[in-house]
Image 1 (cartoon, rainbow, N blue to C red):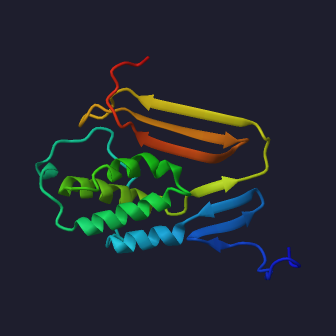
Image 2 (tube, one colour):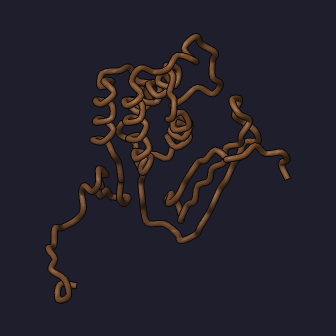
Length: 183
């Protein structure tokens, strides 16, 4: 490679595109601790109380469900940053996907849900992905809820793929159309 391209040997990778890579005795640990603290600072929540779950399982009806959020650019910026953060945090994928569905016109209730997600992020700042030597067995899991959204009756699907014990791919997505059948 050195004969064909001008290159420098920089040593082992430790930080790339906001992702911190730490070599441990078990393998590699990828996290975005610094990036997560920057998201919390952007939202003004660096000293917020932490929370143990990213979102409520059932939305509770409140008076602020129809009040437009006064700073939609802040909502867009924070939720967009959280989308990038799911690179090392698959546990946030569903909640971030849910927040992304209201980018066009966020309400105060939607921003309150994002604040709860940020409080969970505060609780789990040091979480990330662990990659270790393991078998090359490929396992995939998928799940979906049929008409699970109480707002528009659309289904949400998701999957995760493991290579050995290492999570290598995951996603969650709300389907574009309403399912008429489970077949």
